Image (cartoon, rainbow over the protein chains, first blue to last red):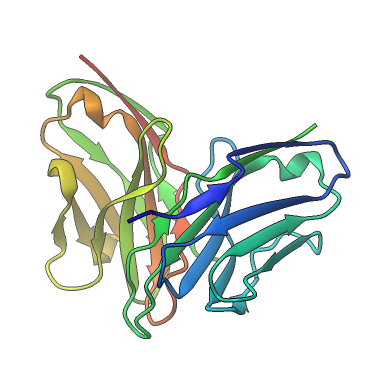
Length: 116
Length: 114
């Protein structure tokens, strides 16, 4: 009965370093989302997967951000050459996709990335 | 562009006071509406949601919200707050008809004093 699991919980990166953030969605959930939450703000959409297909990456802020979900379960968000403005909490959410009905998204606890 | 506005960033109440948190959205079509809560140190959890039907929606822990289509609003209410309601509250909108991508407001931080 595990929820959405994210690792690591905290990551400190030196500017210019590459980082990889992992998300384990709830088993059987087809839809997977990544959000970025800056300090004092609400989460902002980054990208969406339906199984292994990345159907929407309109929220990725630059080509330094890359997400994948190769087997339709675990997903990784990679940030290359991190910058200070990348400091934020990165949230993963998953939901059971019904095709035409919107269902609840379950969120992980997030990874807090600090770029120094 | 679609957006969600939460009117209050910080709210401080005493226990037993009534709560109303404002949420307005800008989107002309049909929407699904949500309130999420984040307790200190925990993940975002769904409080309540509106997809269709009765515009007065009841959620967990005594919370309710009213969808007023003409005002593009979905305000959250609770008649009597408790210290355990101290948390950050996020309103979110999803344009219906597709996958459930959420557009969040900036959040309201609620502190309830005993």
